[in-house]
Image (cartoon, rainbow, N blue to C red; front, side, top):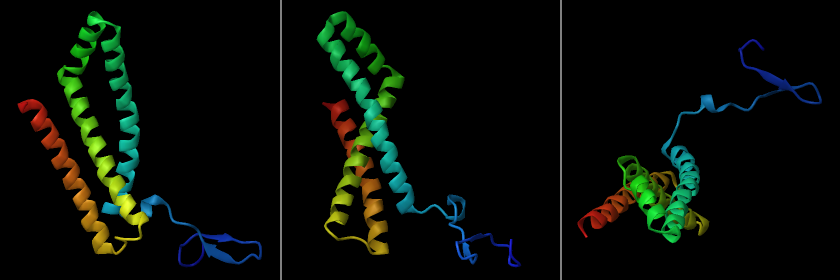
Length: 138
């Protein structure tokens, strides 16, 4: 360590340069959290699709298998999983649209990043509640 207490790495010429900071140095921000959440919902959608495949395979297998699958999916835990899966679907969809807008070259100013991030959070929540409301009422 040098006099100031910072760690320096030596390059080929022997001169010091600062080391790259680790994640602990950075304060979590909305943009970073939404990026991590986008990846997590992608994984959750993949895992949740296995439940959907199980349900469809049970429906194709016959009434007894379908009844068992319905009891799993229709349980309290199954409904919670379906609600979370549907929210993950809408979040991933809305954030994917946000990324498409970025790919077109728009929305890179800091206020626009935060605005679009909150829109994604709100839209995914609203779409989830809307779909579940429609499913329950009708």
